[in-house]
Length: 464
Image (tube, rainbow, N blue to C red; front, side, top):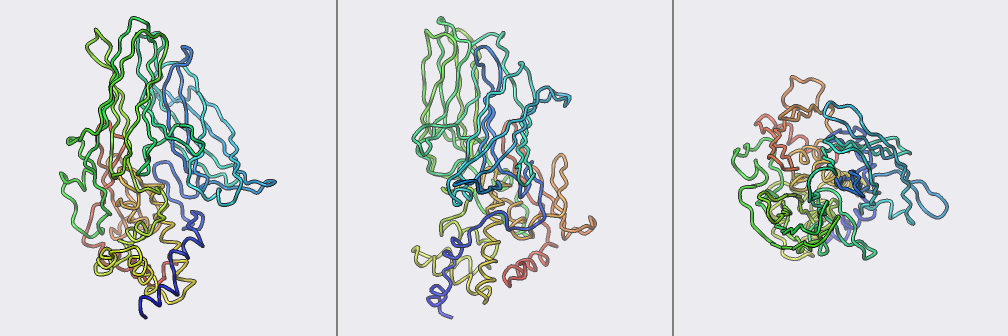
């Protein structure tokens, strides 16, 4: 069948937009990874230790994704109800603080319930100074599914010597034109209203403080994962390390001088548009005149595609087909010179796989559902679908069992732990002080037959 006829008949991008890629129609088996279960609320966490009227506490922000909540139709709107449970635990794991909050999210249209735009939830949580493990659990009241996030925090001592420097947080301009906190580590490329902010506490008029911001960019692996039977990346390579923290590039240096003030002061720094995928660091130092050691706060962020975590544009959808295509098909997609040519080749590819239009539409939807879920669950310094865990998840679905160990994570796709062909071991590669972790699959030649069998199931529609 000529490509032109397939394109006119199929129009797969239109089919994808029509049916959507809602996360509720994927596999029924959940996968619990990093405190998030498929089917549970997806949220990102920002916890900023501060002093408010000499009271230490946390400015707590959650970014809730409406698309992962269950909505009911109430009057002329749609409503989702969540419970947010906040706990502070000491070093021995004993609960020192616990409080539950209810939050109701109302949106005017059904389309808004399918959005990934973050709904910002904010509370100030006061508590005694010290080091704690913060634990935040969000439960969807309708589905009873929950998601938990953990983080270590230090609440400052108001009796200590000043001035004190807060952690760095990010803000961006919302649809209403006002700036609001951007929680989490991930930013879509091209945001042109991003700024970094810090606070200085316990200032007295005699303090003269030089506050400086550095914006650094690090070489980052942004490639798609290689097949599980491919060669292992060398331990010193960028593919293995993920980020080269020893080779920073300075993008911005900004300085502020603070003097003659008392109490606290907030300092903002506008950042340039970040258009290149990869890892960036915002580093703020506060040097008090007459003191040797400056206070330092660092904040890292990963920049992803412009519609992250969704895959919406033709270029993004074609790029994510790398796991489903044979080498010649992949090269043909990449060789397209215009959007019209790429669309024709994209439609032709899907048209060749399955002759049944309805079955092909379901296959298309399932594939991009998994791409989106991989972004929600496995994103680190690069989008989740590009990672080794994302690749395995997209092609094989959720594992039966996930086993976490100190330096590795093991996924079992069989109830027989003695069968290595269906067991995937991911080495955990960490960097001191970095929030990002790289999970590198231990590649083995014996995955070849199983992997190509899974590829055949996809390409013939048997995966449905």
